[in-house]
Length: 119
Image (cartoon, rainbow, N blue to C red; front, side, top):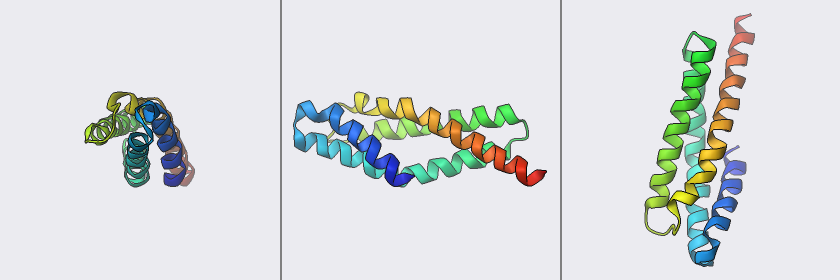
C-alpha cells in the first residue's frame, strides 16, 4: 500500500508543480512519494490502534480518522514547506482529499476484523 500510495500521490504532486519546471516537480513528487511510503505505514498503524482501542464503534472510527488525517495533513504540509516544493499548499491538497477516505476505510476494516475475532 505504501508503494501504491507513494506512486499515486507522487504523480499528482508532480502534475501540481509541473508548471514550475521538471526539476522542481520531481523534487516535490519525490518528497511526497518517500513521505507517503514511510509515514503511510505509521499512520495506518495509528489508525488501527485508535479504531480498535476505543469501545464505542462510532467514536473509535471517527477519532481514528480525525487524528490520523490531522497528523497526515500537517506532516505533508511541513514536508512540502521545506525548500524545493514550489506549491506547498496545493501539494498538500491530495492528502486533504485522499487521507480521510483512506483512514476511514482502514478504521472500518480493522474494526470489523476486531468484531469478527470477538464473535
